[in-house]
Structures are given as C-alpha cells and as structure tokens.
Length: 543
Image (cartoon, rainbow, N blue to C red; front, side):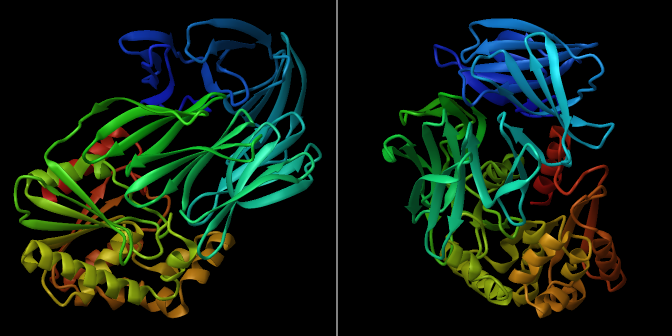
C-alpha cells in the first residue's frame, strides 16, 4: 500500500506490455513521458492487490469514496463511487477485496478514537463499521476473517500477531516475512541455518517448510501459490522461487550483489529497485516463473572496481579502476543489526570519494544482519573483541593499499559512529579524521528511554560493563588522537543527543579537535531529498 506521504522518491508500480516501467512519482503515475493519473488533494491511497491482477486508487470527495480499479499494465480501468457519510477516513492502512469484487474491507486510522477502524463497503453503500482496539501506529491487515498486525522488532525485521474478529490472539510470530489471503510466511533462526515456514492461518496447519544455509534478506508471497525469496550469498543475491503446490523450488537465479528494494507486490510479480556502485540504479521485476528482468541502468559507471570478502566478516571494497588509491575510507553502518550491501550509500557519496582517489572499505562487522545467527552472536557481550578485529582489518587494508596513517578516514552512522569513535580511541595512531553521524554517545542513558522489549534486546547483546562503561563517551574521548566531526540532526527521534552536546562541549574545553554540525529540523536520518542532499554536501566536503 502506498499512501499520500510516500512521494519523496519514485516508486516502481508495474511494467507496461512493452516492459516499460510505471512509476508513482511526485503525485503522478507515469510511464515514460506519459501521465497515466494525477493524484490530487483528495487522494487517500494506492493499493497493489496481492490476490487479484489489479491496482486500486482511493480518493475521498466530500462523503463519496471514489475507487478506481486499474489493470496491472494500467491499460484499462473502471470507477466505483461509494457513499460513506459520517465516516472520517484520512489515512488508509489496508484494503481487502472479496472474491466477487463487490465488497471492500478497509482498515483506516481513526484519528478521533486514536485507533484503527474497519469499514465494510458493499456496492455503493456502507455495510458496517467496527472500531478496532488496535493502535494506529502499527500496520493492520485484514482478510475478512482475521486481522494481522505487524510492527518493527528490535534489531531488524518485523514481528506479527494474528487475531480473530473478537480480538483474541491466535498466533504470534517473531520473524514475520509475508502474508497473502489465508497464508502467512515466517522465519525461524537456528545457529547455522534458517527455516522458512508457511502456515494456513485458518487452521494453523503447516503447508510448507524449507531450510536455508544462506541468510534470508526478504520474501514475498504471490497469489498464495508462489514464494519469492532473496538470500545473501555474499558476492551474489540468490533468488529462489518456490511453488507452494509442488512444495519446493522451481527456479533459482543469482543476481550480482546489490541493494534490492521491493517496491510493489501484486498477483503476478514483485517490482524491485536494484542499486550498486558499478551498475548504478536498475528497475525491474521478479515473476512467479523465475524471470528476473531489469530495464535500463541509470548512472552506470565503468571506472569503479568492486571486490567482496567474507573473512573475518563480509567486507565490500570499492576502488578507482584506473588509479592507485591515495586514501582509505572505512565505513561502519548503524544498527548494530543492520547490513550494508553494495549500494549508493550516503546519496552516492562513495562515487564522489572514488573520484578523489579514495578506496571505500565497507565493514559489515560481527553482529550485522543477514549473517547466520552464530556469526551475529559473536559480537554479543564481546564488543571489545569486535573493535580489535576491526582494527586488524583496517591495518591489513592499510598495508595492502600502502596508505599512510594520515590518509585514513573512519565514517559511521548511529551505532556505527560510536564504533568508529571507539576504534579511533584504540588505534594508537593519528588517522586523518572520524566522521560520526548521529552517534550513540551513552548507551546507559539510551536504555532509559526505550521500551521494555528494546531494553531486553540490548541487555541480551551488551554486558553491564559495556552498557555503563565501554559505550560512554567519558571513557574514550581522551584517547582519540585525531580530528572528529559530528553531524547531528536537532530533531532526532531515536537518540537523545544531549550526550553528544556534552561530549563536544567537553572536547572544546579540553582543546580537543572536535567539530559539531547541527542539521536543523533533521531526524535521526534525513527524511527528505533536500535533507539528504545537504548531508551529502557536508560529508563530501569533509572527505
């Protein structure tokens, strides 16, 4: 579902009969230079139906809900108008259409009652409404017999609950992947492998299960007949197509390592955006027959060489093809349970750095997502060892590229920024600089503002000493022998950055070379194109 707050970037909806991409962009649905539909202020939401080959566009004009039904290639459409007097629909969460296509089930955010509400619409009138005792800040899906509520879990991925129409919890799943009609797909993690399980939510019967040694990145159900899985193989992304009816794999494909965003899921295929340093931006789809199609590349580059390493943990190296690197930029993602694929990171900052004869070393340190469970657990309550191993990696690449200490730069975001600072404090050499973006400067203080579930998650991964001592700026700031540049949004909803302000104030009082850049009205990460561009310019100037 795409609502009226998701227009900052083009969203790939579908492909025409000529395999031309169709985008939702800047309040328009476009195919090439042709405008298919303009979305005005009455627009409520855009839906890709998982069980039917069509798209629905909802608009609300006074007391009338206007439903436009488009075919998958947008070549045909019809309009339905439904009177919904006395129903205040502003933000739609989910939409379900019955098999006869004459009944619509809509879950929307009821602003007045501060919860989600279900409205059932038949033909051109309201059949009934049902206020749900469910917070509207979580996703709520409906399929005419039960609700599925989904929310982000600590670390990465989503958790889900299935509840009946009387709000009784039927099932709970810690690693929810996808759902379609009566089927729900979830993941069970073991130390060295992962297991996907497909269940029928009506009777809780297991339909299919399959084991994978490769970590699962994402999975989607198509038509309640097929499963499309993306798996992390290091150099490649593996695509596995499973037939539910046949109970196993029918097609396997391998894609060059890149960051893959799933934009739209319909009954025939999923649309994807692939981004990587060398290939640039590619738009495409994966269908139920295992076809992987990509249209033209945007920003493809020929003068970048990319290598992948698996030890001691996944590492990606981008370097100039025609010149010897003069600098090394080591990048640490946030998280800690996140992962950096071959991607156009920081608004394509890396390519600009490469033009300056800089090699980029992306460090997916122990604890990162999309590695097996045992690899992630190597970091738990052992973060000093992660820092030591990463220092060894830095020194090894420094030797390989023959780079002086003064030409090494560390950059990190959020938790990765904290690791970058701790690494600099333990390197015992004076590197060029550390660029720390929205760093976590005091873990103990952070745990006092998170939920009990998040607190439990952190306590499982960090020892008392790490929480109270290691990840406290007061205990490492004096050991950093290099320039430090802090970039911090003043509207950070994730971290309380008062600790950052205190650290910079202390550094300035002690005449340590720390500089703070405050981003006005910016959250923990930039949310608009303008904010992202401003951050890119700032970091690029620092490099």
